[in-house]
Image (cartoon, rainbow, N blue to C red; front, side, top):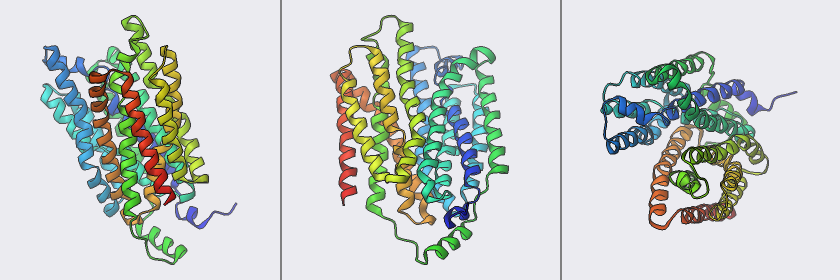
Length: 401
């Protein structure tokens, strides 16, 4: 079977995708691994007061995302200039070192500083997104980014599970060291297996195929995608702070509440893992903007019955369906940006997109906690529904124009 000219321009894209999926999975596991035992580690570092433990735990967890949001555009710009593979090598080696050092911390401020360092040096998942988006044939972009998104979301599911299993078996510090070793294996795979197509060669082949100059950046569309990514993550994360309390209205017993809350959180992630590659392939066929708009609309509508459930199992089912609706949306946003900016600026534009999503990741839980504390649990779902439907309307209007 004869390859298309564009597919021939990226002969290693499938192998690159496999390396990026495995590397992103392992680094996301490392970032989320400490969730179940973070307060215990803070306590081991000498903090005794419950309020202080909660404060240091919150600082340590948020530090990585804060520094990652600040540096994402910089790494994207450097990726455009010096190569995407080099940025992945830097990120994997930096994360391996940072995770190993976290296991050697002796004071809570060191834990926060090292988590800041992990976010500063990391960014493997966002770097993988840039490489896959820029070094995959356009006809396969949605599917490839969907598969990568599944690997990232799987890391978000597996990380906390391993964080609950490993420390009792091998100890907290040893868990960090083991994680650092696994990420170092991802560093070796990235260094020796990844094959980035030289940017000059890609540009030359692209000019040969199209015989036209690079198009200018579609600023209006790119900004809409940045906003859509931020609102999407905002709406997804706004529910997180209240899930345990909401489940407690329908389930009795501390153990049962914790178990059901975990199922609710995992259900959305599982739905995303299942649907992301399929929605990506659908978007390649019918258009990324149509899938994005439809997914936002469906997700917003699914939030309405979540506010009026009468049993916890209903929330598990609805969150699973919402996860399936959300699965391919971030890959669609990435593909839209990739298709509407010159190849020489893909990294920088996707870096800003990543920063926007981190803003949503920080502001979403704050919004959910404030609304839940002031108005109750159910209004959080309805307010988030309004955000999702507003975002769907913006994209529908943009698509029509």
